Amino acid sequence: MIQIPNTMRPGVFISSSVRAAASGNAVRTVAAVGQAGADAPQGCTVVHTREDAAALGENSALQQMVFALLDAGCAPVRAVPAGEDYAEAFDAIAGIEEVRVVVSDGGGEAFAAHLAECRTAGRERFGVLAVSEPEDAAAIARQLNCERLAVACDGGSCTLRTAAAFAALIAREGAAGCYNGAELPFSGTFDGSLSDGQVGMLLAAGVTPFEQVGGVVECIRAVTSHTLTDGLPDRTFSAVSTVLAVDEVVSGLRYAVRARLRGMKNSSATRESIASQLTVELEARRLEGVIDSFLPPVVAAHPKDPSVCVATLSFSIAPEISQIVISAEISI
Image (tube, rainbow, N blue to C red; front, top):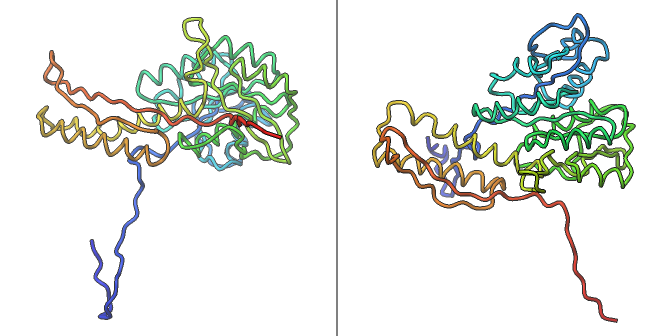
């Protein structure tokens, strides 16, 4: 409602309201899956504080990751002990829609399968897998070759906390974040060490490496483990920010038009309304810098099933810059 000024003095007055530019679900909960103490509660536990995490086992892998997430401001955290069956552990969080990022200490194949199943079910989420040794990290990344999974490696003894801090950064920044050279919300002592040769080897294999610069832990370059398509080199889904952008736009569009399914007829007016709603959502993502451009959505009834409404979209992702090359011609 427009507020009338409480003064009779002539002038220009502003009545405004502030709202979020995007209409999607902005809540990004992080889940941690890993080895825990023998007495840790089974299934998914909601952890709000460090005291809550005491039951996960003193200095266990799961507790270390949860502590790092809490220190980074991610609360509550969904914690799941893995035991020997990582697939069962991932199943415990499969139906939790607000979980958008998962960090784990193992179970690579089950992890990749879980992320693929969630994508098929319309619950897009991104995974971070902690692997300390560079050679092991490179081998695992090549084996998994998953566009929704980043293998995190720092070459030290604190990789669990590094991976959890990276997951926290993704949860906080989302698709609009820039992760190459980004500072991690990392607490504690960092002892990771990677040579230039190891960094190059890891990046080529699809591993995200980390280092400490000036007392700050940084992500050197954020890449997914996807490096091949049908056995051929393919870097389309190499950048973490690219995958996050695709998932966030798709989930936002789905959220924006979900209410249209209730009590609506497949009429021209309804289709125009859906197209307008999709345009608003795409424009919001463009203003955020998530996408670079888009074409007007085309909404039509399916030619063989009039109860189905088909929306055709076309948009381009704004890629994150990883390198700047300066070409100089110098005359003396």
